[in-house]
Length: 393
Image 1: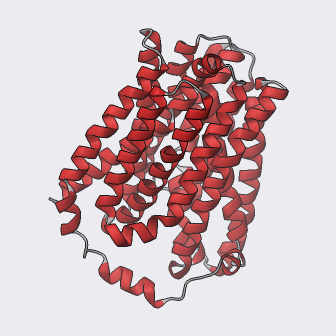
Image 2: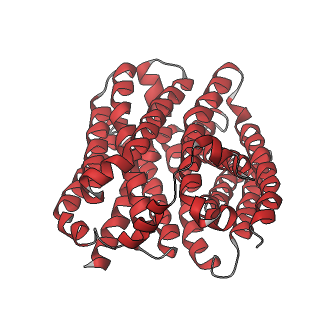
């Protein structure tokens, strides 16, 4: 029964990834219909991100009150309703309205499931669960591309994914007894955590290396979200691909993340977290070089795949290295603030690029990602000697 629940959690992570990638794929068709600037995708992204931040901050209280199973089922249902609302929208204002439950649902399920898996399953499952997120994120643009290619419209793409979310909600509701059976597992660990006093934000940021790791995480999530949201528009407006073709090609970025995270689970058996992070950063740089090279569509598509592969190990490796870098007694507090910085990065950096693309040129896309990458690498390398002083590796 315990393994059956793990399968359901894997399905939930696929569901979590499905809606994360479709806005970028659908937007080249959507913004023309609504007669708004291309940069307005950033506004929707920001609303979704703010909702995600708010629901993540409340996830601990909600999970304690209702349990992980119920929170997950309700969150997926909320996301399904928002996606269905998107499919029925005929104005940008309505999209903004439905973006609120869109973000609220995503944040609760993400935080709650990550915490549950950390308490109840071996660490290797965390990497592979995020791989399942990549499966969903890769399928999303393909579903949207199918709807656009067959002239069903972007509305149908959102409707298809909403129906998949509703089906998963039904599975989660039927699985609620499985979650209850596991509610006491990890109680001893939770009891140990309660013995230590919670740290304030000021105390967390005063830990050696904490500021640097927060900025590293901010930069990583900003880079991933900006690439995922704007890749399709970049291919349409700079490389002059059709919206239908670009929607399919943009999924290569998410395929790169998915394949990379599947492989990362095995590489971590021999490589340290620091080595995995540096490997990812190197692959991202190579992908950016391919995007900058004037060799046409093939070079751009190769670049997207490499950037996705590079993104794959960074998120789970930063999270996994936190106890070793900052101490097991402080790791939960540090990870909480890391997640907050991550959502701030996804909230503000993609809209900022939208503003630059609208007022300057969307060809700035590779350079914008490169600037974020440089700051990420500097902060990560600056952090390492500080944490090594307190916690030698």
